[in-house]
Length: 395
Image (cartoon, one colour):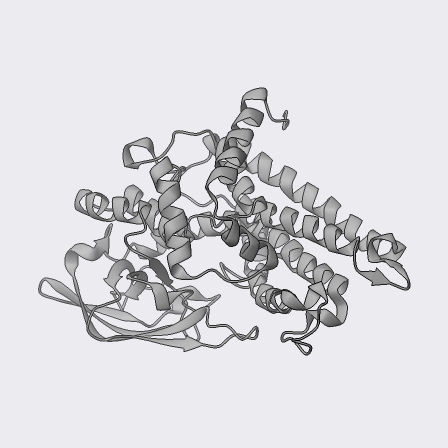
């Protein structure tokens, strides 16, 4: 299999890079390079620029606003966004619920929701995990009782990322308490402004409020917000999670972080010389680069085989990408912490210092702490190893 890019693919990469150069606001790029958080309005404004270009939902079918790009072009596009860096389209809408709706949803759902997802008119969040139902997601207890022309939902979701911004949430709810746990679950779309929905922030170890608890107290949802068939939600969730796990590899993010590590390691001193000249540090850096290259080639092989894979079922190879991708992301944040050394404290001890590090290095500690989660969300790496042993190795 030839994994080298063609002349046309290299030209496409240049086209994407040129568009980013001309379009990404410099202040946004600076914040992302330094690891700072963007506000909601900044992200929405950028995603609408992408949508105006026709690139926000590039991987969707053309009849729903997609580009018709090849799998390799999609890979290049995402990698360029991550390396530039620029915010990738919001995964909860574009990569998760959107494909579920256009694959399994009704025509009315497609007509209403898909254009709004593409233009970020609705900010989506994911209602899967619950207290006691994370890796064992099928044990979830949030229930949706059918009463006439509506469902009434009661329960709690947790670790709901960016729910504080969300207009809509896609939820797994138990609709048949008698059936075995995987068989009695439905996939339901809920308006976050509905009466009875409460969002409570959870402060994370990096000091941020990225995740939340979401409570449902007699929340009424019209029956037409059920996606697909009742009690078939587990099938739709597996389809969705395969998309999430492939994206978690984030090869471009790790490439950009390695570039940043090398840049800073050539400036910051250790023992009277740049840290980049330290043999032990260079060895750790080289090992990480080799592993990242191996991950990139593995992802390219998965991309090259996408046309032969059943789109209705998750590709078990996505679990391999999820495991190694999350491990490399954590390693790069550790290396970045090592480069900065004492300046990587999660707060600035010397606000009047003229040292360049004190202006932005607090973000490095936050990034390190925040990336502890990547080996857990989207299905923990332990769960991914179980999937590989069964679906790939046949054990």
